[in-house]
Image (cartoon, rainbow, N blue to C red; front, side, top):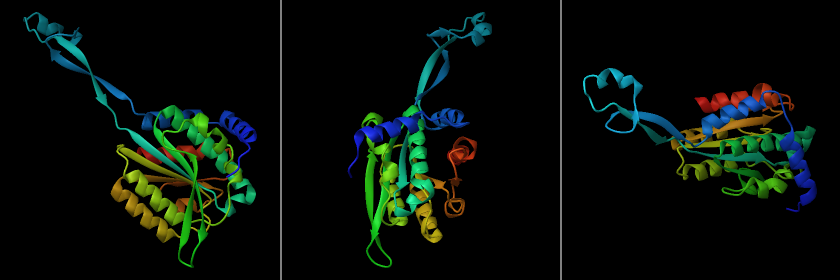
Length: 255
């Protein structure tokens, strides 16, 4: 994959800095859902620590356990994989351009949430009538910095080619997530759902449910995405991002 780094980084910066109504609130909500932080609580009836105001009535009786201590409990952690359809059908009607902006905005949200995430494109080659090979395109790997991934994120609109091995790409991505130790494992797929076979997707959903992976689909000019995927919403134009698409995304993750 040949990338003009200067142009790609410029495109990334433009997409990253774009603002859409409602996206800011969605970003904050997603951060609360996914962010791995320590939950703060209080342990009461301690013999030392901070004087507990609720225990004033017990002080008069000479009771000694009138202090409270701050406790820290580790919250659930999350791992998020983002799968971007880079098949040739994404060239139509600026779909790849919209997909790039959606991916960059999602990366911005995940970065703020401070969760572990990776982004990969996918397309493939038909081997037989029933089988296709999968080509995964590394865009941002686990542990890779957003700074290093900028040129690849800004080049997504130029990646589409070949066929759509949807079942294989989803299955392998679910399999990878299932092996990670995080409590919450989420797979976002950004696609135009071209040539998707509903029964194949339902089969992947059943596998994902068994291994504890949540699949959320963001369709690019693809209203059928809500019929093909259990958690799906279509982005017909960029104004849909804050108004409906990411709100549906949040509702899917709150289940």
